[in-house]
Image 1 (cartoon, one colour):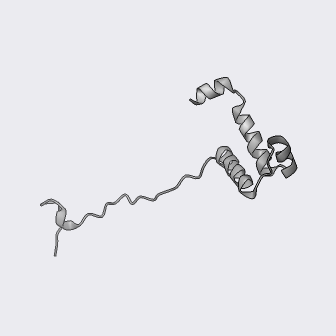
Image 2: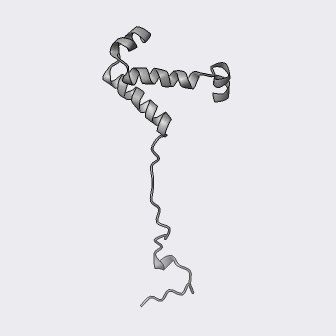
Length: 85
C-alpha cells in the first residue's frame, strides 16, 4: 500500500511534514489562510506529536525479563540434585 501511495504521490511524506509543521508551529492566521480553520491547541499538540513520532520514532516500551524462572522445588523431577532438608 505504501509503495502504491508513494508511486502516485512521491512527495506525500514531505507534504505531511509541511502540514504538521504549519499546524504545530505556524501562526493561526497562516493555518486559517491555508486550510480555512483556526487550529485549536489540541490540533497543535496532535500535529507536534505526529512530527515527533515520525522524526524520532515512537518510544518503545521496555520490559525487563528475569532469565531465571521461579520453579517450585516440588515439581522438579526426581534425581534433579536438589536436596530438601
